[in-house]
Image (cartoon, rainbow, N blue to C red; front, side):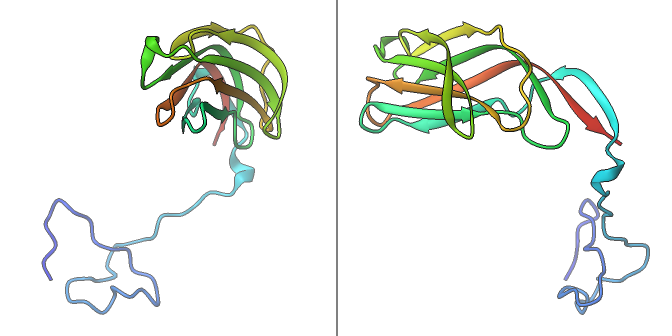
Length: 159
């Protein structure tokens, strides 16, 4: 088997099922080392928020999308929520944005009408893992894709 120069060769490990193939040698190849979580101690602040997007398919006129920070040391500072549906501005649905935990809506942050497209500014405290923004549509067109995008900054941990 020939491997083009632009591709890397498989890392050799004992028991590797590719090790027997011609051209797959153990010279100079090392598996990627994973770092223990205890090395992630350096906080990085003010980076653009990532992971704040979600989608759901509308069924029975309703849809729900839940997004929130995940992982050790990940803190969100959301500034706004943008919602949309496939139908767009002609969708006369109502969209409610909640702050909650464990997927349960607790505090109503605002209402977006029409729910086919709009933006809601947020003035909430920072969000830690376990806290979520829960966006719920009602009266939407069946089969539409409902989408959420959260914009803001976040803190994370680095090595």
